[in-house]
Image 1 (cartoon, rainbow, N blue to C red):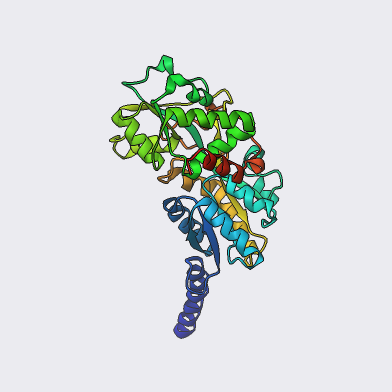
Image 2 (spheres, one colour; image 1 turned 90 degrees about the vertical axis):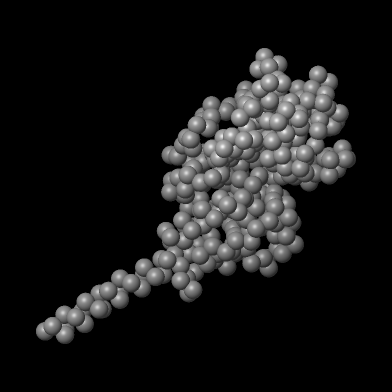
Length: 337
């Protein structure tokens, strides 16, 4: 009798253990390949949370927005990628325009407001960054802050403004100006910035130089400043953020995109991954991460002292129509690239 009970107990333990090992992502576990242009540190938080929940491994190939977008275009139906993630959405539009995305599950699209997804339903935003002007508190009076991002092209800002035109962040901001104000106004704005501004390599450098008083102000995304505040304040304590609001191009909200490739050989698991990113669980993991970017699922607030998403009043843009190639050509013509 004792032997029979012991045998039964071993069988029960074995039956429970096999699925647990699978859920932990063993060597034989299913996997997906993600072409990732989002911050590697963020995916290092999100991917393990997805694997723990589903047992599906995530293999990351990291790169920049247009580097990976152009690679996907070249690879076409032969691409090993199952999912594409970006920092900003113009690179998603490029891949969408080539017909390389599958449509996302309707239940996934319902997790975020429609304004943050492509009209085609082929990709969606899962996080967002707000455009801001960071300014040195000793050099810029609040009363003198510009009402519009386009005001930075005015001669009164000559020698006082900085930006990083080589990065995807600034290029996404220009794409919003192009869509909202048109080609003529955008070219005039870029020429004004060129006459007034100082170019730095990277938004963290812009933040550091503004805080040090080397330059009065700079165009960045919100999280650079808030992240430095959480870490030490060394590069932000002498500066402050100006949110433009009023649906100005300077209040542009750039979304990080997620889409499933039509060529994916693991499309069901790829769909699960994008659904996880937008789910309450995935968005809570995002909100708790180092990123300090805005979750887009209304069930989750970022908190942590960051200006709430509901107070930003961004302009309405057609995400699929944000133009990357034309913006790059305009910045090349201006000598920034």
